[in-house]
Every structure is written in C-alpha cells, then in structure tokens.
Length: 78
Image (spheres, rainbow, N blue to C red):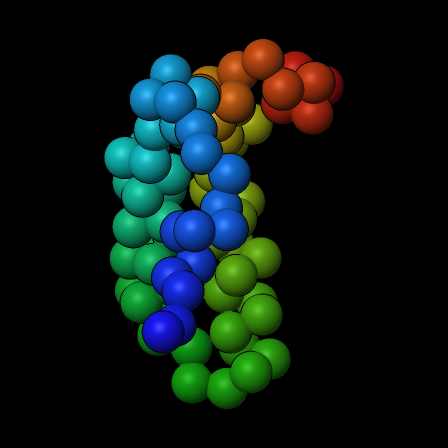
C-alpha cells in the first residue's frame, strides 16, 4: 500500500498554519500583470517580470507576509 505524503509531513496546529489568502492575492496580482504584459519571448518575459515586480511596494509585501502569519519572522522585519 502506498503511503500518502501527509503521513510524513509534520503536524501543525491551526494556530501555526499560515494564512494563504493574502499570498494567493499577491500571486493573482502577479499573474494578472504578467498576462497584461503579454510577453512572447523569453527576454521580453524577463523584462515584464522586472517591471511587474517594481509595482509591488515593500510595504505591500511586508503587509501580505504579516497577514499570512509571517510577521514574527526576522527576515520580514528587516
């Protein structure tokens, strides 16, 4: 019988699990902006990615991570 991956994953309580809606909203924004850029070549895609990432402010990213439960992470604070 094949074991499922969840058998090996560490168990987390509900309080420890990060919230995903904020992360999903950021990825939805990223995806939408990249689709709007409509890059058709790899170099154009990289240019579009650079432009799109510049539209995310540090505060927006920090707030998203805090809302997802990573507000106590030292990497987020710096």
